[in-house]
Amino acid sequence: MSRPETDRLIRDLAREAGAPPRARFLSMRWLLPIAVLSLGVAIALVFLLFGVSAQLPGTVQGAPFLHKVASALALAAGGFLLARDAVRPGGEEWGNGWGSGRWLPALLPGAALLLIGGVTDESGLSSFGRSDVSVPICVGAIVLVSLPALGLILAALRSGAATRPGRAGAAAGLLAGALGAAAYALACKNDGGLFVAIWYTTAIALVAGLGAVVGRRTLAW
Amino acid sequence: MDTREQIWAEAMRAERRGDAAAYGRLLEEVADVLRRLIRGRLARRGMGVHEAEDLVQEVLIGLHTKRHTWDPERPFLPWLHAIVRYKLMDAGRRSRREARYLSDLPIEEWSDLLAAPAEDPDRALVDVDRHVAALPMGQRAVVQALAIEGATVRATAERLGTSEGAIRVTLHRALRRLAAAANLEQAVPIRGKA
Image (cartoon, rainbow over all chains, first blue to last red; front, side, top):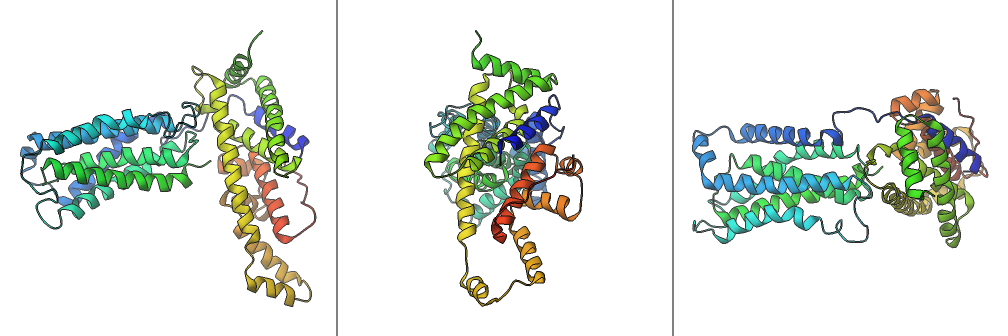
């Protein structure tokens, strides 16, 4: 490549001054509606997988359900903020590990709620749930219903500019996994605080890890 | 006396108003700064002016395609810094990958090469196909559209949702890569159909 070619490139690019980015639904501008839509998709999948139980009205009024949903949505809010910032270049001073310590405040409220639930757990229920299949069903279901959310959110993040694609993908996974966990609370039969603290966290972490791996490739530009 | 931050941020705002002249000047100034930065760094690694110019273009295209992610309320230089760093990191990763690709010489290919007395044209075509298939996805799409389907640069840019400049650059890179793979001495110069 030579200098004249660069000059021609600059002329080409300059000619496009003022052209707005292509308007797409799956873009950062719509990240919040996309997150809400993702939650809706996850809830629909939960009902599809587990049916709508007769105890649902009772479940959604109970403290355990509200605790699960509050924890999950707090983590989702953190994931949302992290994902939004991850695709805005220049927002963080680089070299400070995970985005100048933004991960901690983002994760703290949700993590604290789960921790409190685990510590104050007096239900006497096993941390492995009611039966042998509780853990695989819970973790598997959360990961599964989070997948569409992860796809939608990653697609939206592509319209931004991730300067650390893996990290941005992890944030997307945190958001998607937390939304999936909130949706799964509708079908979850395990109300032990310890069970929730351990296995919801595990499932969300798995989705975040998946987001990091997929994001490294799909968020590169 | 305005600082560079103010001058460049103003040029970026002018770009949004559709001021091509101001935006073009900004790109030229950024290119000059990048040249100074990148040439020095690459020279130490034994790379030439051409690689440096490639990288300069790479960053300019990145700046251009992601320019809407800059928020005019925020300072411009940190944004540009993040873009430049990302593109340099990316180039480092890519050059490692390319080194692997070039040095990936299975013993079969080596012995075929030594056994083949002369190049027959059919075989050469098959080779080109194979090399095109080995290109990164973006480059493959551009080569496919321009060289194989005979589309114009503009039509290809529209279809792939990028700028004509970016298409030209991608094509150029792909051809250079093919030339390297096919072991030609010189890359084919491009006559872009604008």
